[in-house]
Length: 503
Figure 1 (tube, one colour):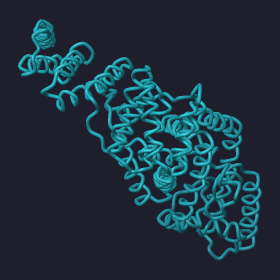
Figure 2 (spheres, helix red, strand yellow):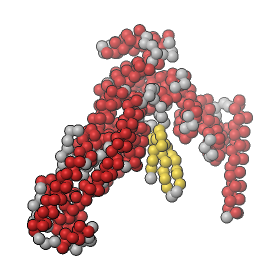
Figure 3 (cartoon, one colour):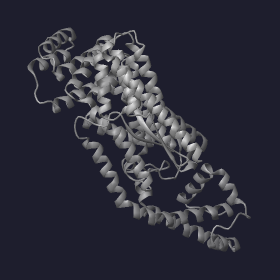
């Protein structure tokens, strides 16, 4: 079993009010409805089962429209099961089934069918799932909303809420609260409608937030494709943890949903096509929001609310951008940054300007500068968001000093694996520079002190010792590192031999 634990950007610029509110509404709705749903399900299920058994054994009986729709839908969705219950020699289901097999009087059988149909109608009218979950055969407008806030059990609820939290709060931070709220509600509708298109005539109620949450996952993939997700793999009573970028994990999940939906349809009890439809909607909507400019406007609105002051020059530059005078706005912002290099608002607006101009090279440079500024202000989460923007725009190599600071920020957050990855990339890209050597030593130190990988540490220290970059001032540290790594390796070998002898 694979479970996501967290991802690299586990913070936001302000409290994710909407995401927390959605989680709270789902939990309250579950607590308010779960016991009732559990009580009603056996009654309705028994009436449904008896109608199907009687209709299969006596196809000559007349059925009320509701019962006929139930039989037709079941026969279509579960043909193999229908054939089994049509067989007179099938196993007895319950005492009622045994009793009906002995009954041959047509009038008595018809009366029983009429009574069962009436029970089915009565129980359906009182059932929360029939009234507020989404039923593709007869969708009601209210159920496009309410079905997204009902859940069938604790595991169903907890799983959906965890994924909602992981993907939701970062999207709320980027899009702002109003846009994020509209997206989530519309995504739930879209997922249910896609489910209805792929399961026309189905009478099985669909409930849960998974369609809307799948849309958040699709949007997350578009918005943060290279963000690494921390996963836990439960295998053979062991927990194996590893990091993987979103662009590998989320498409794999989508392919599995397509496979299960195609292979099992609605018979699996899981609305796989609702997940697929929600994911596709989320990905398409995220692309549309990004290229329509709505995302940038929403992000600027968030920045204006979390910033302490608004500078007149920045306001003027913003007006020039709105008027399409990009060159004038860019010149004004560059002058402002020359005078006030710590102006985050001006740096963000300059990035937005280059994005609107489709000037990829300038956008990469401006985003790298914004990343450095956020690191200087000790805002590592914002810096990581800048780095993701830089990578998504095709950037490959940050300025060495910024890249090094980014690795140190990761270490402070105890994200040692990703810090190692960034140090190694910096060392590879700047192999002939002092920064590359320092990154190599930082990677060696991480392997030795934090990751318990002395063999890798030894190789990195030895590579640093052989580096053509002048490093006389570092030689003592390098040799000390080599010695410590060898000691750690010999200690590990001795322990392994002792363990082998003891066995």
